[in-house]
Length: 449
Image (tube, rainbow, N blue to C red; front, side, top):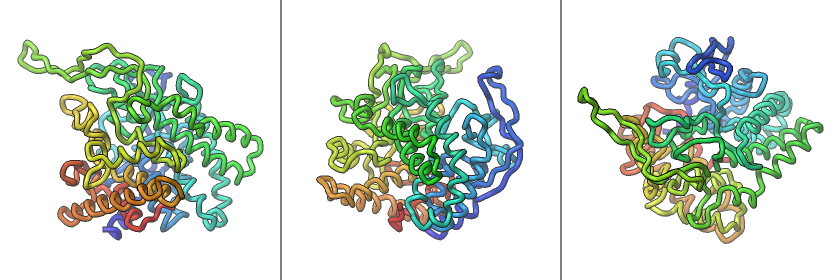
């Protein structure tokens, strides 16, 4: 399975040329223009179903590829950064040639005001943990720095929330009545439930954590590049976004015992079908309790453990202990096959988002997020403190669950899958999916650093 996963990931690396369809606030609704000409050198998640570049997927792909060919990973990062516009935006999905267009949804175009998780910054941070790579690739890292700085600055500006240090994913639809919970595709966690009524006052815990991680990596890169004029700015950002007191004030709920998004939210919503005169059924969302500004604390899952996933909490944190305890609860995220995306106790667990949109990030097990959880558990298991043994035990058990299930599913079906059923462990979604699911190879080798 390991050789298959890595060989197919390397084999997925492709080269495209063409134009990307991009929308803009300057254009009429649902209209786009050609952005380019562009070239892209990148891996893909799945040749038969997703033969195009995905921005945050590619960051995960290269967490594995860097272990074998760090120069290839830097080539791929540079190619993506070559598409950056003057403000710092990069297309989230890149559809350039006829093969990609045949498999892309109709009228797919990118929005120049919408971001994606900064996985390339995370990847550069991992590369810089290896002193041999830094020594060998210092010139390339310095050449990449100006465009990563532009990307980081754009992210900080466009994702700014209503309070100091808060962050907000842009691109949610606050007017739709067709979805149980309006999606947040820019976050990478497409249908993960957020505030039920999107507006400008909401803010999101995962985006805040991405900025905390990014500011730390960018400070390290700025020092490598000797960017003395920008170092004071990024130092200030690093202090702001890594301030745990502020993180707690923005996102921690003492009553619900967790980190949560904040926004205009109703606890009582449902997709209701009404029969039409012609006999058809029309589905729309009904809201049964008035939305109020509050923590979105009827949802618990991947988003809510980001301070743990990105290793932002100290090893002696009481809040980290709460996260690890909830992690180990089979009624929450723990399964014999890996961590499910949303707790079984959550209102949105396994819930369709429309009459036809099956749960995507509302229960299924995703290997990229289990990789981040395992990396974090390994990290905390190596630090002296009250949680060291618990973290080690959870690491060993979770690794066994993930590797055993992927091995069983591969042996029985011949495929690595997009995600896995949290009740049976069965492969689901697209196959073969030797994108981030191939991170099981790194998991098998305990190869995170």
